[in-house]
Length: 170
Image 1 (cartoon, rainbow, N blue to C red):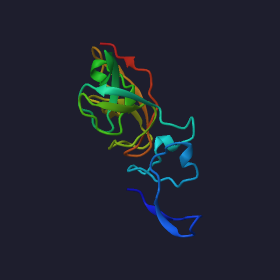
Image 2: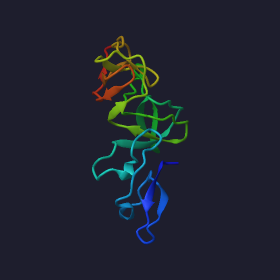
Image 3: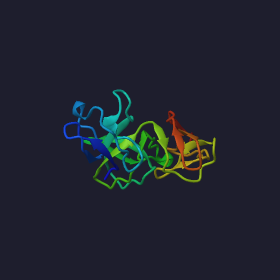
Image 4: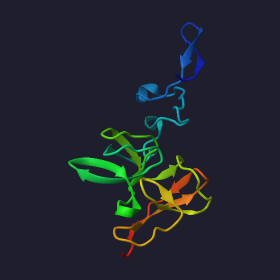
């Protein structure tokens, strides 16, 4: 439920309580007051054309938690699983909400992943195992990759800039 405000009825002159909109139905909602969603943001359909998050929809092949880096692959439909440097599963996106196996999830291909912990401000973040990240380059081995994910803005926020993965020599 969004906050409410008083709106003047121009016909009767009376004030009436009106709830702010948390989603737009289009041109008919022009001039109306917007409300922020549960994350404190405007709904994507309230943004100007061209100002939207870069996302991809996929079916999760395993449970994902908020902040996980996701590897996308085709298995009849586009599926997502935890990216992992130990088995050459590069990161294509990250999730900001948990996604259960077999459910449809939304992956973000850019932006700020603010569902992380324990990062050193300014440190380069590298793909870790099981959908995680690390600040340590993984040891060489069969199917091991090094993929830069971006820079830590704070202990909990990563400015995502996916790099091309590099295979380590075995």
